Amino acid sequence: MIATQIIDTITKFTDAFNNNDLDSVMTFFSDDAVYEPGDGKTHKGKAEIRAAFEPQFKNEYGKMRFDDHDQVIDVENRKAAFRWVCRHDISHAKPRGLAMALRKFVTLLVVGDRFGWQGVDVFHFDADGKINGKFSYGSFGSRPYIQRELG
Image 1 (cartoon, rainbow, N blue to C red):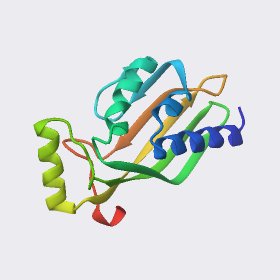
Image 2: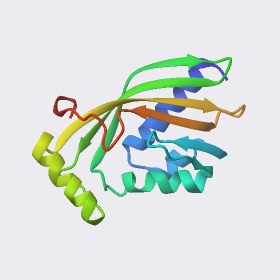
Image 3: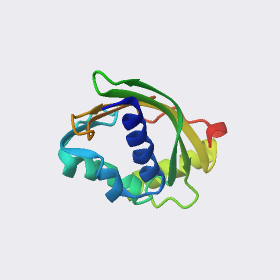
């Protein structure tokens, strides 16, 4: 792999997220990929990764968009770090269950229906250029540090 291949993969992967196309997102993962979303959980294999992503693609967290701040590419080790801001518009979110509905209500009171938060993804690629590791880091705990001005 060369740097332009890694950048192209991350760009297309992010575009698929931003277009709310889960089927396309999943084409970028190897069959044995690992995803750690930063909440202490580990999802192994495409089926578990897909299940972890599904609430997002069902609009449970509102419309989401990831915007790239910058990237660091390690071609020799087939790794990349991607710093981003995740922007949410929860005006039409469809929360599932009472807990998610309450979380939406509190978020609306605190920051409104548009907000964002920042994080970093570290990607590992296999020899075929597929993502075989995606490790997300952000301000986790009970919730990420969200900011109205990033919405």
